[in-house]
Length: 369
Image 1 (spheres, one colour):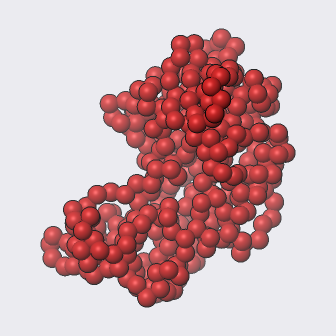
Image 2 (spheres, one colour):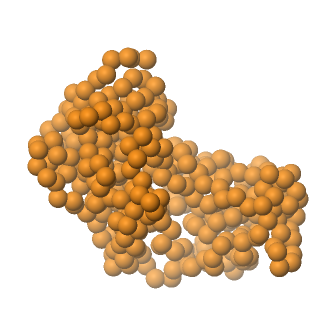
Image 3 (cartoon, helix red, strand yellow):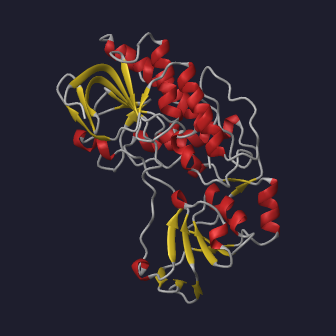
């Protein structure tokens, strides 16, 4: 623990896709690690949220990982766990561009220290003129509450804690959620377990390609919410589900037969108010994540609608703070562009100019799982 307050121009919190992109563009803008900028990450190693993905999610099964700026990802064995592939790539990237990430460092709070922001951590405090927040969502898995949840005698877990299908062999698993992760896990679990899929809304499978025009429209829908200060729907949440060959085969086998959301949880399963119940051994919540912004709470950035209003990447209530990988930039390609946009605006801020909000995303969209 270092009690001295260290001054830097910019602090970057998080070293996943968005954070590394910001670090790259900070270096290109002329700032040096140390007095110029500092990168803080709470994970034990490189890889961002990817390092925690379940081992059976191989690189070939994952949606495309968009390469970081300035360094190609190259070919990777599609049978290797995506967690290993991406962690190695991110570690190589940090070395190639001399991005010394301080880890593991937990940022506990960011406070207004007058002309500078005070970034308080378990490794000391940094005083920064600007902050790039790239903390993503992995640390805040979301599990909705349903009556009787605490009475369930089986096992409940979120996808963040899933490590493979083998431990569920011979059991009945209720998978909750309408996203890509739910579909991937249903297909995997069906090989060893009985599964039931429940969602709040009927799933929408897209036969048409995720092209540029469609991607632009999807990102715009998320951006509209952020501009109004509402919690962002994830970009992934508005993309629909890709009707890949494996998905088609699963549908033909009856694996993707969906039931409406249950109304309550019983000690031995789930039930619907209109009648009907299911016994279950496991409830697997594939219900997504929320933005990990608790450390920013002292700054009171949230709007009455519950979200943080952002122009480009810049927080409207405090233009020293930039959110990357948030809202419309919450995709791998969007995170790259957000890093570049944030640094452009921060350089204007440091120079005493009024920055013009730059779009944090481009027209194309890379759906993530």
